[in-house]
Length: 96
Image (cartoon, rainbow, N blue to C red):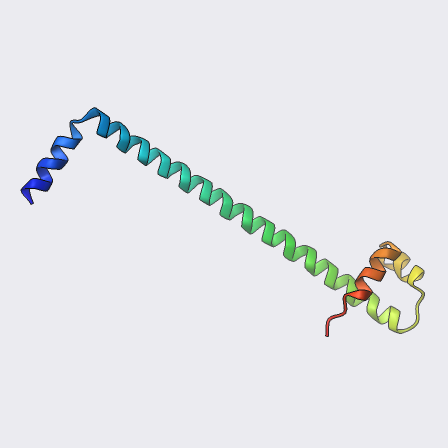
């Protein structure tokens, strides 16, 4: 155990080793900050994607009964405030 304490004492007096240690500590802080930022960005992106999927599902649920009742796609687009192309895309994506 004495050898370890002696080695630590010796290294703590070595300016090069202290500089390397400080650089390593700083690098770890930066890495943790970047990781935290990446997690936050991923979380925000996931929430945004979930909201977008929910909106699309809501539109689909709104237009499907109209389509099944024979309402013209042009009217469905006007009622839903979306383009005819969007209506067609939503009608193509049918959940089984």
